[in-house]
Length: 119
Length: 107
Image (cartoon, rainbow over all chains, first blue to last red; front, side):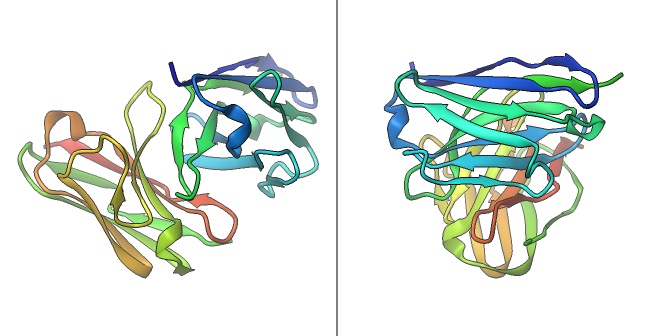
């Protein structure tokens, strides 16, 4: 079954760290660029970070640059998001998504994992 | 950063009616880099349209996309009960941004 399953969310205090994981299955993970997209409660979608299929390129939204790090382990079919210096405004559901090759769009999404940053 | 502005914020329509959703970009966007998604409560977004006008796999033909430059449109020709949801446009040319969304609700 082709799917993405996120984990690692939870409640964390401001300034602390959290690492999210996204387990991929049912497709050749190492052939696809992958992204993290988040959605704050009651708000729209916000792109967070991207990583190329071969790890050679990484991109970040200005709002998380210098605090978040995207990575992947193609041998384990897993995508990661290391989140440091968390802020209350980082509170959101975090989705991992697959970039469809050649389509410049996301054709597969996980169900999301909730991150709450609160004292 | 390219800002995408979606209008209207909410569209109140009845099943069977036609829905027209707008996405306006602050700068020109290549059609190849404009996509539309549908999101329902408690579910992940679903890709509807890519390249401004191409339907994704499994998307019914009542969904169509059009436009170029700074103005793009998603049209649902006849609303089915399952189409009431929030719709987002997204550009992937200059960085990557989403519009604020249009909620299509039952009138």
